[in-house]
Length: 157
Length: 103
Image 1 (tube, rainbow over the protein chains, first blue to last red):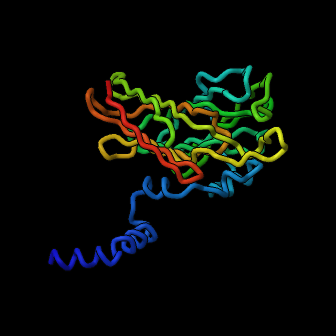
Image 2: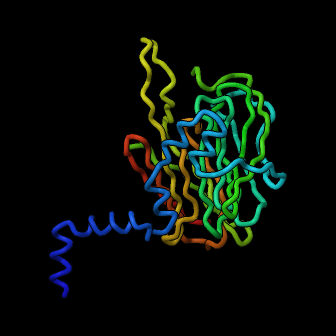
Image 3: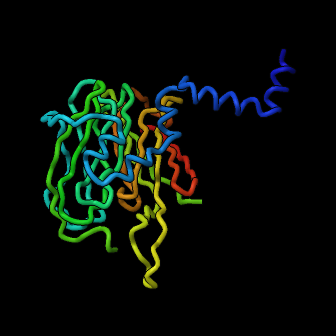
């Protein structure tokens, strides 16, 4: 029994099996998410395109999403701290979008069960713009926005 | 090989707060060098944090995340002395994993 198994592994069967498993979607959602980087979503330039690439409809405005430790005026566009907290139950993912950047989507975070729907990071902003926090909860999309004024752009260097 | 990340993980109440500071250029691919040539994009695309073999956060990033990215999040559980691992992969296929002990 054991020798057979080894033979299969030697022939590279292990890799094929893994591919099959991944293709069939047997792997947990997290594992699949880290393998694939959603190029289409990061190439989009408008909110509508981004939503389409993420596979969702128009998001609903929500007051349950708040920006924490996020400035109204950023002195340096290259480093703008943005924190997003969602109190919507069953929050599955949080994405940060900057309206006037060359590509809107900055980052998207998958929140597995047991992790607080609150993340913070730093983003680049080319100019003053609205920043959106897009939250996916229970299959639906919610959005909140905040205007951040940038006194020094982050794209010219 | 890229420089190590700085990871700090602290128990706060019944959760663990993780703060990560990565060392990465995060070049957007939009800037030009003095000769007018576009500097090719080089940025982190995926970030995964695991605790006890379980994914506690996974993220996909674009080039608009700041240089030397900072990330903080919280997850339920976690005890002092246990380890949290963070892995990133960039668009050149480079990878780095670092771990920190929860304090």
